[in-house]
Each structure stands twice: as structure tokens, then as C-alpha cells.
Length: 61
Image (cartoon, rainbow, N blue to C red):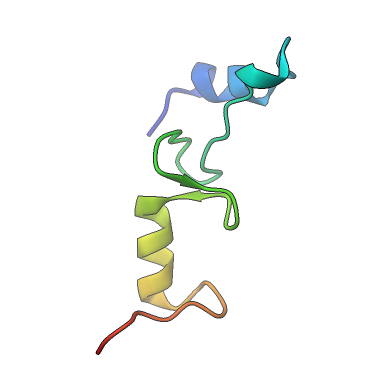
């Protein structure tokens, strides 16, 4: 879980476009972020296993 101050800093508009930091909206994690879902890999896996993300199923073969 990211600190509140770090999350607040990332919400502010960046001075330069290359400084934009995208963070998971649930936990604030910046690494392992998936833009399509606005989630980090950990939160994505938790929600996908619960079936709370529509159209995502666990693969098996």
C-alpha cells in the first residue's frame, strides 16, 4: 500500500508529460500496472479470481 502523500503527489498534474506516474486505483502501486484495467497485477489477480472483472476468466488447458 502506497503512502497517502505519494498517491496525492501522483494525482497532481505533472510538469512534463514524461513524469506522469500511473498508479493502481485500489492500492496505489505503480509497478506492474495495467492501463486497460487501471489496476496493478496483484489487485487484477485478486479481482479476476473473484470474478469481479467482466470478460476475464482464468485460463486452463
